[in-house]
Amino acid sequence: MSNNILQTLKTVRQLGQIKPYTVGEESLLTRLLDGDMELEGLMPWSSNYTFLVKVAHADLAEPLLGIYKPGKGERRLWDFPNNTLHKREFMSYLLSQALGWPDIPITVLRDGPHGEGSVQLFVDAEYEVHYFTMRDDETLDDTFRRVALFDVISNNADRKAGHCLQDKAGRIWAIDHGLTFHTDFKLRTVIHEVCAETISDPLLQDLTRLYEVLTDSNELSQILCQFIDYDEVDAFRERISELLTDKHYPQLSPYNVPYPPI
Image (tube, rainbow, N blue to C red; front, side, top):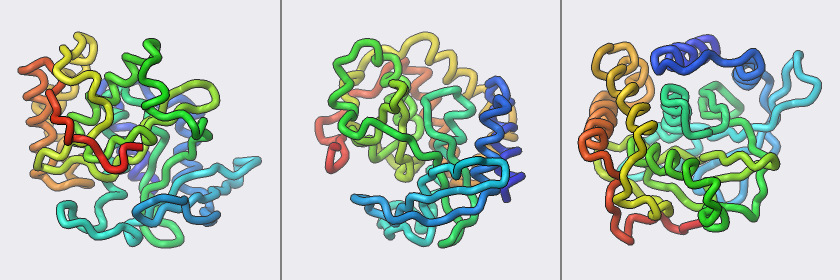
């Protein structure tokens, strides 16, 4: 599977006209895909089985830390098909690679101690920092606009404040994307400051580029259908089309927030 996942990511970046992975990025992907995984323990406060893991590789002096979410550990939900949330985690990273944003930690699909799951590179974050503590920082406005727009097109039902991490260098990472790509409207987010705001021209250009790839060539759609259903890919394409027509972030109800919000 590892070679297929790596090639899929490379192909998606090429289709999205995003520059190829650097040597360092490809090295991290390869090691996360092929390394020996060892469970360190369950992550606290997770609704599904989520493990901190070490991924050791002969080429690494120190193991990588990752977050492993096996399909077998997913709690059954009435509205999402069973054993698909880990694929939606990977699908979200895949989409970010086609768009060039937002920053989602490197995420792969691979086998592990509890079967197939998503494995995401661990972010050493400032854990008292989250969206509510960062939203008044004007230097981060564009970062959060990208996250918010990504959540609209991916139909993210769970953008909690704690799903926006700041690492030790100040970079913002978006995590936890299992509840995404449903055909029905599911958007729940704490980022309401952008509601009804006009989408900037650079972001509209990025959406246009992605939409043209989805409509002019069947290759990207075929790749996406490996991880979510055709109807979900079609709904994803339609959400982009509606945004390109309306050119505004949606106006959300105060009830369109996840619980708990942090």
